[in-house]
Length: 381
Image 1 (spheres, rainbow, N blue to C red):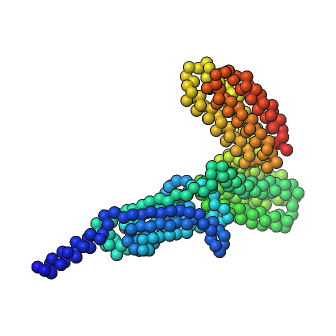
Image 2: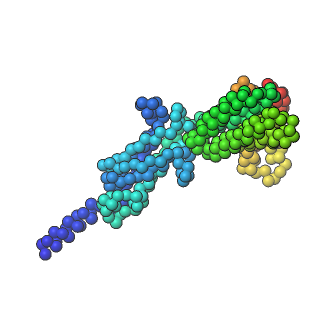
Image 3: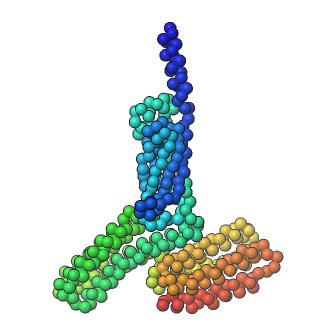
């Protein structure tokens, strides 16, 4: 009887030591690798989970999106603490919000860990967030990354233009082979550089990077091969047709990628379209006040929403121009934004103003148009 009582007491005592709930908390901070100077993310946390527990740690950018984590690590709990280092970027941390999703999965634990948890074994999870930079730096970084990828795509496209010019010089087969070797080396370097880039994955343009560079590389290989086969037979109509088709293919891929990245580059037709769209937004915003006065459906909420819509779309056009225009023209483009912002502000004030601001609005529209008129010509330079 005494033995049974002792056994029961020990069992009750052991059960009492098993928590009814486990804690899991973590923080995420920036740091530097002291040896390389590479920026890293530092994860630190505390938990009441058993010693030796394994935590799955996924680092995400902006939001938890399964399959789109920037890095995964398995982290071990040691005496109620755990830590991990995530090296992601090579030189500079991309601005934005980062978060680590931590998960304790009972089915991935070793038997002693599961046994020590008794009936309380189940999943535990938490998140740690870190915001790097502000909205301005985020927009600046996004433009920089898009521009860098755009330049790689442009370089591939330029190889096709070099090929065309080189063929006009009527090269010998020996000189042709030397140039082909250089082209192939440059193509491989660019395509390789566009894979597994964390900035592209974070900003969800890794699909553009992979598809664009591989598609352009394939088209260039076909272009080089076709041209090489007909060096001695340049008047063959089939050759001319193939070359025209392949060059057209390069142009289409380049244009589509620039569109998806929001880049205009040196395409005058594309710039004119953007400038015209921006001007239309300014003119429509200028007409809001008149619409407010004559349309009973133009409630203050609808009025403000329409104004913000025009403002947002206009600034999207300005960003595209800045992304795809040489730096020497940036002040010119910012001048458009300054004059448009003046108009948007006046139109915003007009809704609650006790005086009629139609003349002030018209004056702001005129100032924008007078400034914008010669911009198209200047951007050609």
